[in-house]
Image 1 (cartoon, rainbow, N blue to C red):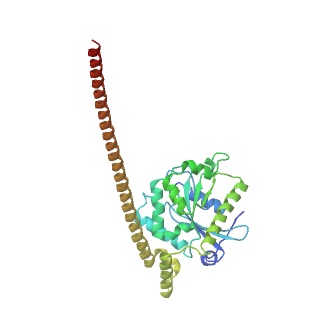
Image 2: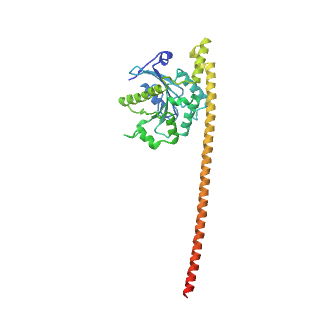
Image 3: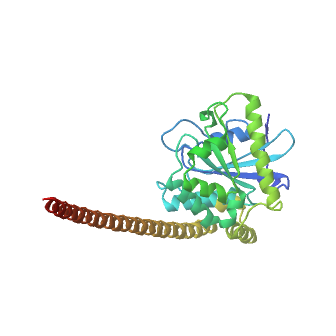
Length: 322
């Protein structure tokens, strides 16, 4: 069983053998429960709820049996439409602050108990726009509520008959890396197995990315702010409430609003393209119906002419006999 590790953040999270995982997804999809399963104990608030339970980003660290260090960052419903941009920006900034040495894997948590929505597809696109397209190379799609899978029904077979186009595209961009988590089971063997399978996927992601955690200009900016604060003699512990961190949040908010605007434009273009395609289909159907109607009319006229000719022929034959 995993054991706790307490101590200085830099000594723990900054170690070369540490793995930092960030959980993202819609409220209620089971992010916190999945985080608890990874850590090995109840450290994140998780319960059956109609709303979100996690209010802010939270980091928990553990040491696995083989000595590997695991850092798990749980997030609130980032990119949920109900969350205000300024609140969302602050939590994204908090997430980056907690994972400031880089992210080894992002777990996009979806629920087998609900359909993949347009909102979740948009959230995935927002994530890519804010963190950069390469973030998808670090993403693993985790399907929670694995207890809903019937006996002998694998995830692949389930997705073969229950995978909308948007989800198919999302999975493809994530390299089709998937895992199933049953957070309801109390079977220690199953808990250990699913954890190890997921952590094995994380190691594959790390290897595929040259052993380097994901960072971008936002992480670099945060590092720069830390150096500036150290130069000014400020404690890094003051940063989350300091002026520089507030400016960093504003920077994230600007990018977030840009991504939202881009997404709205993309959705508007998609809707316009879909409407144009539907109009073409309707026009084609109307044209086809008109052509069918004309063909029927020509056939009716041909039938009438044929009957008239037959009647005239019959009349001539009758007159000849008489």
